Length: 322
Image (cartoon, rainbow, N blue to C red; front, top):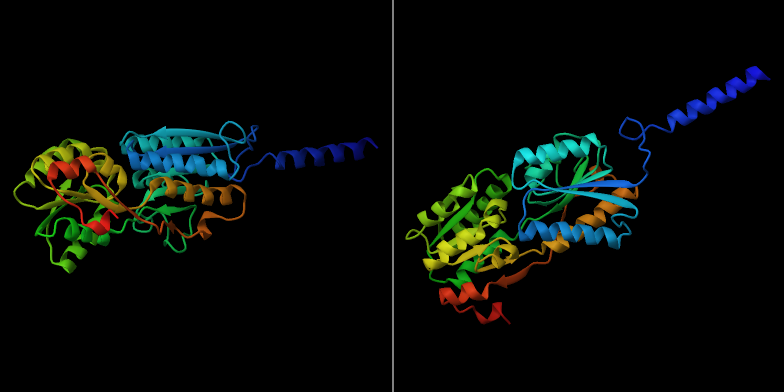
């Protein structure tokens, strides 16, 4: 009987030890609360809305911070090195899911783990950013939503709002791959509709004022896509451009709120909510990131800055403000 009892106890201990191993190859966490890490590249209206939409979307799906999930939100303040440090914290802490807002943040996390599910947003083209094998079939631990804006439609706005424009200054951050991707789309549309263009790139925020000033006298309009650095420094771009009577067509509504003249773009809050729905499916075990295609928002809206419009003395076509 003693021998049999020992065998039973040994078997029980083995089962308990086996049950103490997590999907990430280590010991299972004593705290069963789902831990979600959020890394945001920088603070500006679009990314802030993206974050809030994600939080609200999780609530709608039944995931509430402090109840059944624990959210660790970190802002990298625009520094790639901070993105890496934050990503390392999440990976070392064996978080259950990571939400990365903007391409540099997403790349930092994806480079450090191939196991923890990663949901991304405010990433224009995950495939060209090498986050997934393809946008249709990610094939990795990464999926999410794209903030690809209708660049062609935004260039067409120039023809509507500034019909006499001949040359466009296409301004973006040279170190943001997604910004370059959008710039190329804008250039292609400029060629299609008969507009000349000049590329004007910045590598850090200190160059924004100087580069904007360099376009004065050379361009009739400035176009800035959904670029994180320019979004954060849009007030500077707008002041220089507007003071010199140069309209600014931009990539998203947050940039309009910061002084840009107008845009035809997506709603970053709704984009965040859409990403949260995908995250909920992952947390519920219904789907794996590798099998979830990158999603896009189909609905876009026109918005404009009334103060900037008045300073420029421009009257919008009636079909835009109906």
